[in-house]
Image (cartoon, rainbow over all chains, first blue to last red; front, side, top):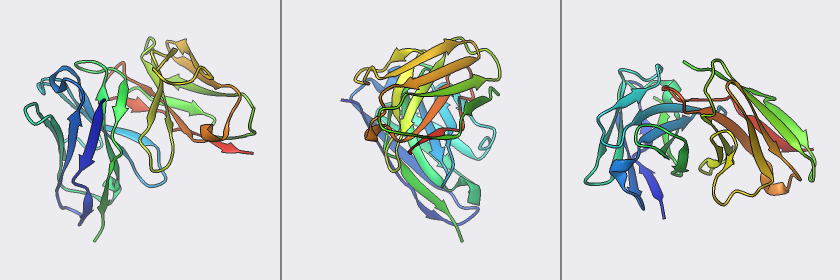
Length: 120
Length: 107
C-alpha cells in the first residue's frame, strides 16, 4: 500500500525558513517522480515543485523559484522541501504527491498535508 | 506556462442529477489531463488520468473526455458523497498546472 506522510509544518515568521518532509512507503522510491502541491486558505490547488525519480532533475513554479528547494533521499525514502524567505502568501497546506512516471505523469497518490503558517 | 481554465467555478445540483465540468488548456496537451476530487481536510483523490481513463477503484459514474485543449468531466447520479471541489490538471509540460476548481454544492 502506498503511503505518504508529510511533516515539518508550523508557524514561522516572515523571512524565516522551514523544511518539510514527506516519508514514502509502499513503492520503489527511485522509480517515480515526486511533487509538492499547496493550497492557500480559500484558494485552489497550486503545484509548487517536482523532482525526478533519481533526483537529478528538479522543477519549480515561478512563484517559488529561488526560494524553495526540492530534494529527495533515496536511502531514507523521503522527499524534502526547503522553504526560505517565507512570505505571507506562502501560508498554505502543503501536500506531497507521487507521479505515475519517472520524470512526470499523473499524480496518483497524495499525502494528507502539513500546514505552514507565515505570520509575525 | 500552460493555463488551465475550468468552468463553472461553482454549481448547485440535486441528488440524482448529472453534472458536467469543462476544462480548457491554453495550448494543446494531447490527453495529458487528470481530474481530482477534493474534500476539506482530505487529500485530493485522483479520479481520471489520460483524459478518460478511470483510476482503479473509482466508480463508473465518473467519466472524462477530450483531447488537445478541451476536456470534460461528467458525473451522473450525484450522491451526497460527490459534493466536493473538482480540479483538472495538466501533466504534459512543467510547470504542472491546475484549473481553478469547480465547487459542486447541494441545491
